[in-house]
Image (cartoon, helix red, strand yellow):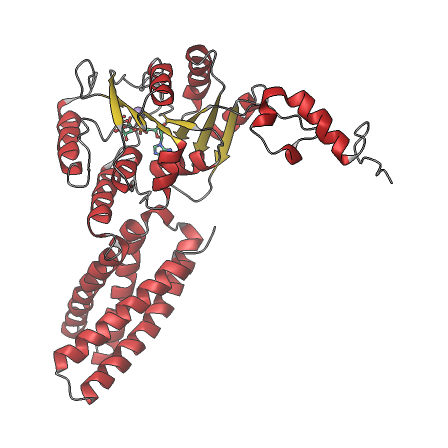
Length: 404
Ligand code: GDD
Ligand code: MN
C-alpha cells in the first residue's frame, strides 16, 4: 500500500527523497538524503563564519556587516555576533539586520562575560568549516579576510593570523604603555606556546574547524586571548601563517581592556602551566582562604582589644573572614560568573552555610587524625585541606555554579 505523504504535493516518503535529490543537485552527494524534503531543500550552508564578540558595539555593527558584505563577495559567509547582554542595544541592532539579511545571526548570553568564551560559543553555533574571529569595532582590517580564507582553504595551514608584529604590520596609533604591555605579554605567552608565532595575542585570525574541534575541550576559555588559548591547547602544534596588518584606531565605543583583562591573561597562562595538575581556580580559592585566616586573626585581636568577650570576638572574626573570602572569590576566582545584587546576597548566604559545614568537617578530620597519634600539624593540615576541598566543591557547584 502506498502511504500518503504528509506534505502537500510531497507524495510518498521515497518519492519525496527523489524530488529532494533532484532539487538538491550537487549537494545530494554530500548530505544525508533523509534530511531533505521539498519543504526544506538542501542547500549549501556557509563556508566561512565570521564570529564577532560584542559588548556595547551598537554603532559598529552595521558598518562591520557592510564591510563584510563588500570584501566577502563570492564567498558563502555568515556572521555570528555573540553579545554579552550589552546595555546599548547591540543584540537588537544585530537582530534587526538579521531580519533582512539571513547571513547575520545573534547569540545573546545573559549573566556571562568574556571575549574568549563568547568566541568559542559563536564557533559552536555555526556549521561552517572555516571560522574567522574578529572584533566588532573595525580595528581589524577586514580586507585580510579573503586573503586568510584562501590561504587556509587552499594551503596546508590550520590557522591564518592577522599579525601586528610581522614585517608590514603595526600597532597603528597605540600609545607607549599599551605597546610595551602587549610586547611583555607576548614574551610571557611564549611560556605556553609550542610554535614560534610573532603575534599570539592577536584577536583576528581564521582557523579550520577540525583544528578548532581538536582543541575545544582543552580550552581554558578565560579572558581575552582566544588565539593564545587555541595555540596552547591544541593536541598537535598548529600550522600557522601570519599576515601583516595595521591595527586601526577605534571610532565608536571604547576598549574593554582593563586591569581585569590583564589578570585574566595571567590566569590563562597559569591554567596552561599547572591546570592539568591542579585547577587554577582551586589554587586561587585556597590562597584566598589562607588570607581569610589572617582576616580572622586580625578581627579577633581587634575585638578582644575592644573589650568583646572571646566567643563574641571569634564569632565576629569568623563572619568577617567569610564575607571577605566571599567578596574576593566573587571578584577573582569566579569573575566570569560574578554575582550582583540580590544574587550576591543569596550567594553569600550559601557560601557561609557551606563554609560552616566545611569547618565542622575540618575539625572532625583533624581530631580523628590527631587521635590516631599523628603530630598536631599533620592533623591540622589534613583538616584544613579537607575543609578547603569541601568549601571549593560547594562554592563551584552551588554559590557560583547555578545556571542563571
Ligand atoms: N561578548 C563579549 N564579551 N565581547 C567582548 C567582551 C566580553 O566580555 N569584551 C570585549 N568584547 C568585544 C568587544 O566588543 C570588541 O568587539 C572585541 O571584543 C575586542 O574588544 P576591545 O575592548 O575593543 O579590545 P581591544 O581593541 O583593546 O583589543 C583587541 O585587539 C587586540 C589586537 O588584535 C582584542 O581582540 C585583543 O585580544 C587583541 O590582542
Ligand atoms: Mn578594540
